[in-house]
Image 1 (cartoon, rainbow, N blue to C red):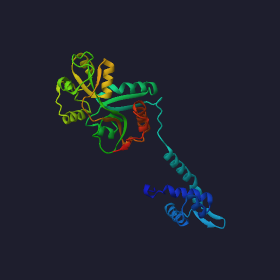
Image 2: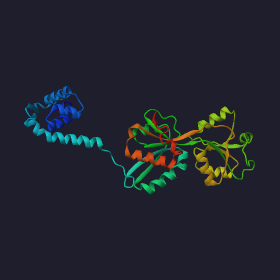
Image 3: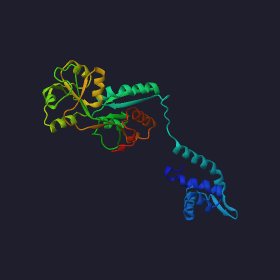
Image 4: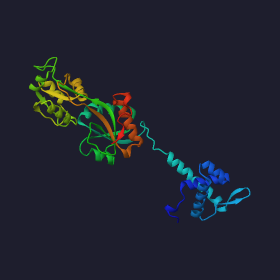
Length: 312
């Protein structure tokens, strides 16, 4: 049996197919965009591999040998299979797909993004099962192995081979109860410093907040440090504490619990919420559909469709 390494290259099979039709080295060279010496070289290699002259020169052109006559049909079948292979793409129909997707989300995104994502999937892709993992130090490995299809949030520590695409920018706001005993229409810096605060340690942007406080020489009185955002709206509503949060989670909690939103009285670096995926799954139709869905749901600006789309 001929080894895989000894099998004819596709270009030689293509040469065989065209030469069988044209019976002319000159016309074959023209059709393939090659020089006649190159065609002669390829034909010599094909003859050697198949152990037959394949074509012999006659007054009417290059006549196929009996071996060539026997090989032309399987040759064309192989070429057609190769054409189908290169044109083949796994289809993905969200309306009928039965597939599990796993999202890596920040704690805030569980509240701000997940309900809208799930509502969209239930309407447009009812067979999709969605699983959610928390973004952490294992997220990069999970993206690489396919354990997580997309990670959505502020994840600046991801390394090489990871694509990223901006969904929306985030600045910062402060939340207080509408019944706060000392804060009314504005929140001056001196009042901010004097009041008690909630610090959510799980927020992926909290390092930016801490850096801003350090730059401005602000020391806060931390009264409560919860691990996440669960129950935070009720805490702010029922106490005199201040929560300094990224805008989206802050406005979501304010809307749900009737809280008051104030501008931050000191500058904090903004950041972008992005979706991230591994290069291995860049062309996967299901992953592409999921990315386009999140882009449609959450993209900040249509002008940024291609912005920041890159592999690190």
